[in-house]
Image 1: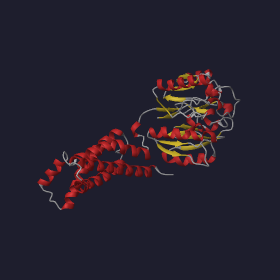
Image 2: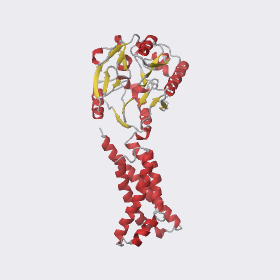
Image 3: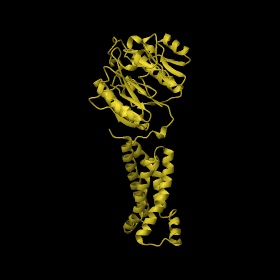
Image 4: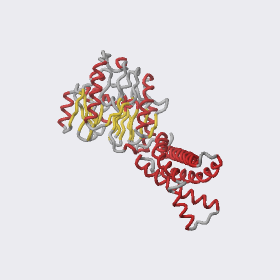
Length: 401
């Protein structure tokens, strides 16, 4: 596994090289243009700017390591400061190489150069750092700082062949595709109305189960673990999810074969992560997840799942950490610190929208009443067509807090 700091080092160096190279080329081109494209000026222009570029490379690398590219507005400030400091340092090094005395005249020329010959370089650094430099950095390291504090839900529109989705523990029923589309729209609207920013993962028409996007990744703070679905037919779904998570600026890890892991088997309760060992998630997948997230402060507890498709088909958790579930689907309730049984199979799943509000299926009215009686506000959605495919309210989105 590549460590976070290893990626940060590589990302910082790559961004620094990009910033220095682009600024060097841009400033030399400007000088050549200003001198009528006279080729004789090229050696002098390159010699003058190379020291600026070296200074910019070192300074950008150091700044990125210290968090200077973690957020766009910080990157803007970093670019301005690095641009100015690099031309000062670069010019001082050039004076030293040329043996020029650092007297008042030399200092005066240096300050004048900031709005003269050095202006193109530091402006280039100021522009390139929060654009190309930041893009290079994020593509490798994946810092989430640019969207810190946001609550984002990734969703994926149902495929045209939704009715062909896998069914394992229930009898197959006919799925109304048109109604499913309307229900999905209402689900997304409910998330938006609750204050969540909904972001669509690129559609995957032809991948029947792709709408159940939760199974393709699990998010732990600033880190997203891309799953390796237990069903071979679902493995093509992960690429789109990974692209969407990278766009959100998350650090990416992944489960590798022979391990398998479905996101629907992962239930987070504080720093404890319950992982269902069942038909879709195997022991090697659990072992890899434990190794990936233990350094992040999470403890993985393996849970046997033999009566349901996923762990979160059987149990989920309320905002206070109480695990709720339908007992006939739960192998061992004593594994959980606090367990509350619900009266309906479709009442096991809740999406935590806030500390006092949860999202539940309208097909479990008794369970909804029970949760409301505990003092929670319950937002209800009809997802009957997805429940025919063993889906629930959690598996239709990936929540990023």
